[in-house]
Length: 304
Image 1 (cartoon, rainbow, N blue to C red):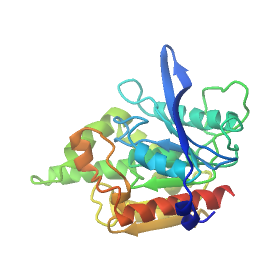
Image 2: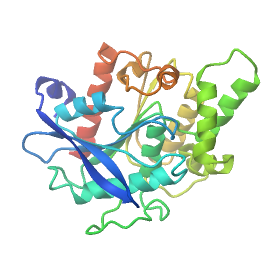
Image 3: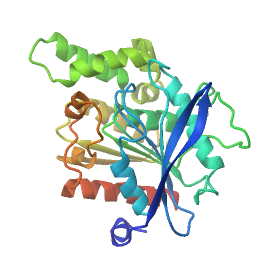
């Protein structure tokens, strides 16, 4: 179904929270946005942003509801963040969450071969990292009863991702060392990089750009890469380097790069400093509607 058709018909949806994983006495929840109707529906595992340390499964609900009303099942995951776990804790949880959704696919009116991932900012980074390394033994360390599925996905949607954590860290440090005034986001993201990654070697190890530069053997799912041309939080040279390397490796990247693209990423009620730093604006803007339609069309194209 084309994006224009998705606009003409809206599904009624059901929303519920389910436990998909437990660490000791602590459950991790997935918020499911389930379209009503005859499946199987395409599915998206949604990963929240927040510089790897902030946010939860609720913060992108406006986008997730819109995807579900178009006929896409969405599973928005909570996952461990510092101080509970640094890298690769969240990646382990997400890998498990994808396998869990595959095991539950029939019950949720989807199929294991109809699953994509989507994330904004650090969530986009995590979506790409898991997509490239679905069988990494570190990431798939938690066994899933009753399933032999892996964490491969049919596509990855990234909204303004931190595609090169080490590059962004050094960029932010350089801005700070240049003296005042520097952008507000710098003082927010630098300590969060440190909390999650611990050191620069880990940032390089988990960087999709560096992984491609090292020539690692990875999966190359199709990518929809969305970024605002005015974005100063996620440097454009890092985007361009990723796109160049991914395409050179044989991967497919659709680049949605236009002024106002960030308008698609709606206010998600994080702390005010995060909202200001990541420039969440009007979810009802024409740019927002076009961007979400592009996401819907991408999911349908790569899961049909």
